[in-house]
Length: 222
Image (cartoon, rainbow, N blue to C red; front, side, top):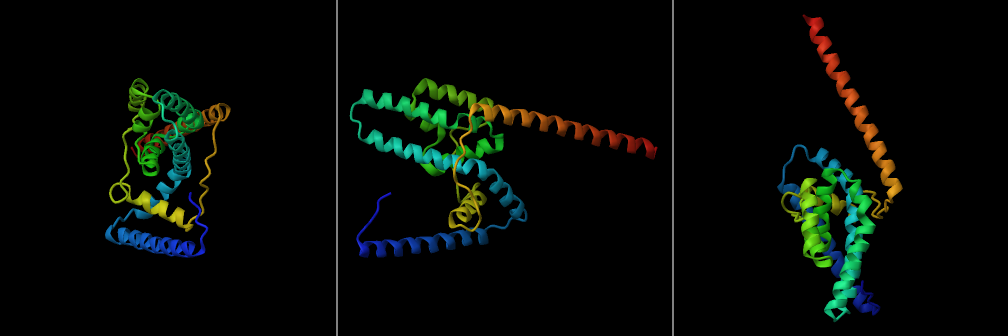
């Protein structure tokens, strides 16, 4: 981020930012006023819950890609750019692989959209840019198996308007939110999977008990 040190420019720049913030708040209010959703509160809470895991990851992706783009701009030779792209892809994979594996489907879907929001590129485009055709096809195929769309985009005025409202609240400081991504390693992922399987077993047992209780209740009525 450029740092402007001339006082007059700082004052002018601050004024512009303040005006933009007011405009952003007014726009958000307009969006809320224009839309009527009786389930807004529950949807808002759900998106906030999903964002707690995915938004920090999207911000981290933006940070890394901005760094890569800056480095690539200084490389002139095509061969060196290709080599750097492979290294960048490996770094991205290492940074996110277990965090992504640990996401639920709904979180994975949202992450695809948030990456586009932050970087201006779909996940598909990022893979293609930093790795190449075959890898791009491979990852797309894997994503389809898991029900995720690597070509997902983000529409703050359409399907993603509630998500955008939550993000604006986060960025304005209206709600407490930790934007720092906690990198997950292999050991932590394994522990998470064990906990997940145990939760699934407990849930299945509860469902069986409920069904059994309903069957017994029907028998007693007879």
